Length: 333
Image 1 (cartoon, rainbow, N blue to C red):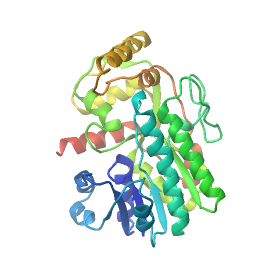
Image 2: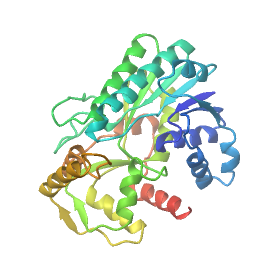
Image 3: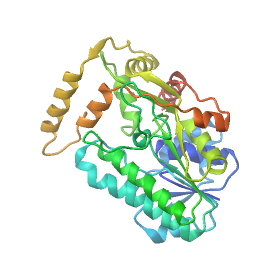
């Protein structure tokens, strides 16, 4: 029996799919009022018997702040995949980010220790990897360094990693994965789906920066192997391809039958944009761009995922395959 938090998210849903494909019994945490239909849609996207696979999932109602529900859900569980997290770069979400990502992880760790779970795989982020900016290369040996440019999201995920390390010190066997931008089918308007949907509508502009992307299917495959093959306490970068945003936007536009963006969006325009959005949403609403997303879009990032590739002898998919998979998913709606 395996237990998954965040099962309706892009990563969590793909982990569930991978586990079901391996014949594992899967139990998943479900917040009250959450919609599980996206998981069924993802399973049906990949498998002719997706509906039948969906019926094999044991949904357990609860959340990261309900210790009793977590302990109950982990009863008899061998492996825990902690995929639940809040991803936001809106500064107004700083308190919620810390509560969900850091305190929530602490609660999962405590429940796993109490339940005697054999192994835990925690989903972190490249946001906690140092050394990746502006000509450098980030890898697992380079720690997170908080400064004035650090987003509340990055800080919250760094604290979450500390909670996992604290659990390890108390006897928990756990590994951490650090995926980059995860591309895969998921809820409209969430995570990378927001970017894909906006670019798919057509845009003439691309930002100056670069980043790394990884296919959600590869994230799930790596996680289900690393939970037993990875070394306790280690971090593992999950990287499909490092590429400029221009190339990524071009791939997304092409998958939607739109022309490639041809106009560079300079840093000063992004700076004006996030300030304008802050004013527009001062009394409510969600900004389309924030100070942190503007900074990310204009900076160069590069990551070395060779540690995971060597350990698993695994070839990660490139960006074009990941983008095409999402386009096929959206086209099948």
